[in-house]
Length: 272
Image 1 (tube, helix red, strand yellow):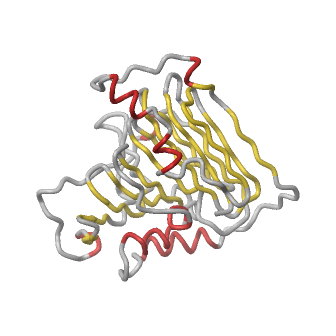
Image 2 (tube, rainbow, N blue to C red; image 1 turned 180 degrees about the vertical axis):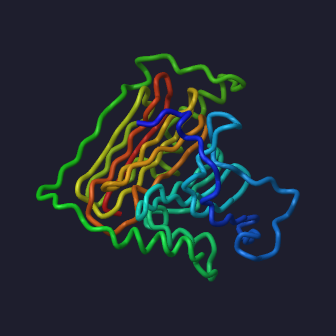
């Protein structure tokens, strides 16, 4: 398990960035196209403070709107996964297979555009990974406790009315698909605190949603086969994470770590 300070890195491995405004994407200079509107600020992945970044393994990032991004990561060769981050009042663009498969996601975000070479290469590496020799399918889940057993953590600068509203599980369940059914297995917790984990082995795909509504931020660990990586999720954000690229039959798992006093909703489904 990595500490938040270990999430520091540089952006040398970033292969490109894309901008999406009014539901139309504009390729940035990394992909040789017209420059983005200088009036619209680029959105970076949330981090504990301005000196910390989590971009060292970024293959590509697409800015959907202010505060809403889709980022493609490859922490290890073949360990490609994606994360769609947004503010609570926004709506996920990617659904089901689009949210778990990098090429399907890119096609949804940038219709008719050619897939960037770096993303295609990472995708090919992921699809060529071997399956695990697991004879019997199994699943595991747990961690944490109901948030009702503990008072919600205070969030500086957020009034109680907003906290109470965002702690409702209605949007997570009915709009974000956090507790949707999964063909192989599904599991969710609402109004949860102090950690969470869920896994399925083996499985060819997985997708998880974490809505973090109170606290100081959590560490998310994504595991797909032999690839495991961590990223930071800030408070007042909703994120859906693919558990690796669909294809090989491996263990796919999510852990919500460093979550003492952090309140959130979390749900996963496998085999989508």
